[in-house]
Image 1 (cartoon, rainbow, N blue to C red):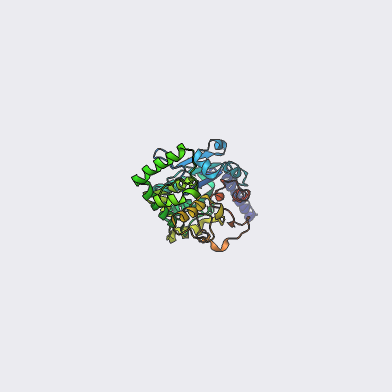
Image 2: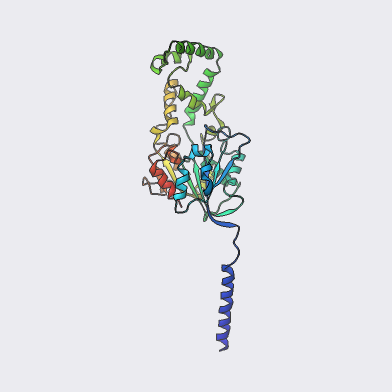
Length: 351
């Protein structure tokens, strides 16, 4: 009887203890999913010193997404992040200078880590989406102890990561040098104004076929492909590729790769180069300047497949429901900005 009483008392004590555990006050963690988006090279929207490097939102104020966010990630980001079986309740979108600063920049690393927490709360779940150079920024920050993540609560998804570099920067360097030489020549600049004004006065359109010989001879950009030069110039600084693109040329950072292999939960690597505008521009310009074209190997228009799949190479399949997907899409498609249904479905299904 005495033994039974002792066991009974122990059982009561255990039940009391468990009941106290059940009604214990909540920890600093919230029961929400925080979604982080870290962009890559963005020549169309470069922040100023006054701009905040991270823009925070909640699911209630997504209609207030800033223009740089919508331009890069697309309007559909508001929709697919809410249709997920773990919808985002809070958001962080980086707004970084990735043109004049490389992926090892301290400010970019600090911002990538700042984005992990919303209002200093540690969410129960975090989903991180990295595009292009954004992969290098984030994993460099981890490799160099700017911050740490918990693999059990944080899922990281790589989109078109240039883990072994982007050889497309090589022809870009040559093209930047060629354009810089022409644009800084005062005689050529004056000639362009005079000849261009004369042709415009008489209503003559400067077609590429007619003026290609003249362009080569005197360096006048009078062709109807003038927009190609303007796009390429966005990636150039003083006759060479800008520091941001230049930092992605060749990557030899084993610690970065090790962190990516450890924390990557899924990825998309593309092979749809032919529909990528920058790739088309550089191909045309390399012919124009008679320099080597971008490497013709499988790529997404910017990043070679071999470079992208350097992380978790054995896990990639061509099936679109696979966590590591070799997809027939280009570099920009993979962000979801072009609203490709298969891309949006893959993004939505990430847990």
